[in-house]
Picture 1: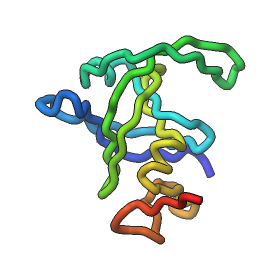
Picture 2: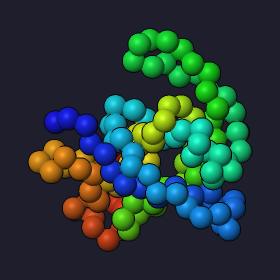
Picture 3: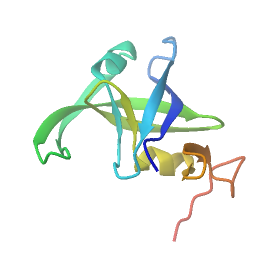
Length: 126
């Protein structure tokens, strides 16, 4: 399918006076969390809440800053999450995608709101 990027808006709910930033995020259903760059974290004045160990594809372990909270907006959806600070671009993982009820459309190679629930997220709790 190739790489899928999507436009999201990031903001700091603790500092509503700060302007949100719009970023192009790599969508990765194989990753769980939101990852952002240090520049994005600084622009949003996000606080480091903790340091988390992560393992990258090359099997190296990294101890990364975990920042938040962050509000993530996509079309008519939003969620609140924390993020790992790594790299130079944003990565949208499965947790925020599930929280906003987003799906990947392989035919169109893009992220879309779930067509089964176009107006509001639908959560399955069993």
